[in-house]
Amino acid sequence: MNNKKKVMLIVPMLHQGGFERVCVATARLLAPYCEVCIVLFDSHDIAYDIEGLDIIDIHLGVREGLIGKVFRVLQRSLKVRQLKRQLRPDIAYSLGSTANIVNALSGRQAKIWVGLRSYMDMEDEGKIRLFVKKADKILCCSKKIEEELREKYRCDKAVTLYNPLDMADLQTKAEAEKPQLPWKDDRRIIVSMGREDDVKGFWHLIKAFALVKRKAADTGLMIVGDGDFKPYKKLAEELGVGEDVYFTGMKRNPFPYLQSAQIYALTSYREGFPNALVEAMALGLPAIATDCPTGPAEILEDQYGILIDNMSPEVNYDASVITEEESNLAAQIKDLLENPEQMAHYREMSMKRARDFTNEKYVELIRQWGGM
Image (cartoon, rainbow, N blue to C red; front, side, top):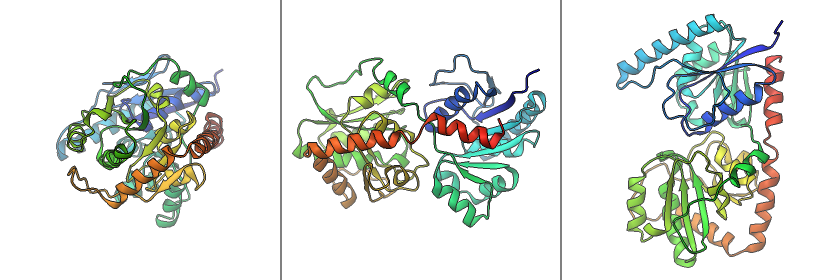
């Protein structure tokens, strides 16, 4: 008789992104201990290796307009309710705001675990109150989110669960291929990773890089992630660094590109738990990150990297406007590039800190909470 517990993971899609990667990792990590399936709203453009995983596509992708979106939420909730009744999972664990809503509204045939993987999830009080009321457990990607739930919403269901990391697998992937770079000369590369989204603050990074380039001619900037980045490319051209900024597009294996760099820079003005930051640190990249809510401060802890003031959320593609924040970021990058001892120190500290975010710790907590 099979006594393994059943876990249903619910996620909108599996295109490139932080919580999508966590979803796939969770399915693989829990497989030895329970029966796992992943319920997708839309299987279009899957960016991760799902071979061997139990994938259920309910074929209810995005609809435009407010009425269309509300109707889609109801459709998804009804379909997931049917799946819960049919498959009888013990736990339904959702990741991503839209998946969390569906999980909360689709009935209590299973314990409802809601995963808050970004601080943006905290902006809608109505949604948070729904989760607090309906969920059996709220899994937060940072201590700050957990603390806010406990203090503001008097929620005793909130716990912190940092994202999992497999350093050995990361290193293997980083060495699996050679990155295709556009520069023939040897460059000292500053890299950042994320989809095209204003929240990532990439215009700040490009402006700061243009200042760095004036003093360090052998540098290049690389942004790894999905999107056409048209306004960012135009900004780089206007700043005179168009040939020195490389937008790789989406990479199924981005880690060779990360490993080819010398510094990782995070300029988001809001995060949850920035996977890319920890992944870069695991590959030995010194890290410079904004003190945005939430994630970087918890990860760097004033000793494992360089934490700078948060950046303005006001998008500004005007090449003639350079803010004090951007000048400060440029100064930090230049100082690090010019100080080999400091570079070596932060490389060591990056790898040391990355070892605190392991697969084993992640699975141990889920098994403990789920009684597996």
